[in-house]
Image (tube, rainbow, N blue to C red):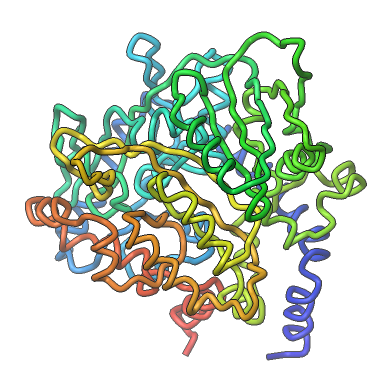
Length: 528
């Protein structure tokens, strides 16, 4: 390694906050402006929804070319692996045949059916801006602007309305999927139902998603948000579960846990009117405190309160600080002076953060840093918080309730937990753990396998974007593969074209950004 390279790595490792401020933020702002302009021009000039069928046929032709060439390689989308939300990068992007699925439009809004039809690369920011301007919103609208419909369907998507509507996958009325034999199949509860129920969580291993029809609901201008501080674990769990089960009263439910015995439970409802019980807080403005810090003020003051938050501000309340992980990257990022001067540029783009990882930061991240979402039956919430406290000592924790609805054919990767009497409780909770644990002698190498065992033992699930240490056998215990295996055998060319889910999300399919750069460099012509 040259002296210049060593100096650059030293700066990236030991002055990451300064580098992020001076380099990554401006680069992210320029890149975002460039991509927004490029997408707008493309939309106006050549990507009108009327051309959707033509673009789908382009996908079909690529698959036909693959078949005609012998169908020897596995397939994946051509979208850059650096754009994934995982802290890892897909290794299979270097070896698989890439299919260009350049589909990113909003195709149709049907107020009569209360649905919006979109292409898989349409983003949450794109959809929410368009829908809200027309008086509608998605029933479940996950947090970050850059999250794509395809990623949320094939992987995992949740919001604080999921206690009413379930995960993002469950607001999908239909899917259009191009299979490995080149057919475009419409999938719904009444049409190709097996495929419809197994596309969620399948991680692109059944075909290429080319459109989805999503449930929409009427939007209102504000969310009336009630903040309730609590100071004991029992009270925290009871209040959160009570709020989560009141689906007719609460449109949104969320909890931020700041210690073993302290949290703030939030309940939100749609409204067009500002009451006398609170003021408007446009929390999304760049100069505002990071949301989790603002929420913590209610805990410190010891008083409940009410605010009226503009709808898009509410949906993206954690975006600027990536929940609370931005504090580890830019420790001074929530300072009023920083927010006033550079708050508008937050957050830096995830792909740039990953690409500038060094060997030293990789080792530290893999040993000490945690980015996990565990989906647990709500009856185990108390045990789960106690487990995180005992083994991680990592706060805040994010609590988002969600319903896991079964279907009449019991198809799918995840199912709600049956009770001893045979009844089924569909209420689960996502426990999000992000950051560096304070537990003495913490090491992911031992902590993560034990956490995954705890989740399996309590009939929970791990978000697929997160790092997993599960063996193939344990992965199949966590996720029901029975119907998935049968369907892959039935679909022509499917097993020949696509990996199993485990092959794409395990260490076999994903590597660290540093390892990915090395692999890419070694595979380029002339590298040897």
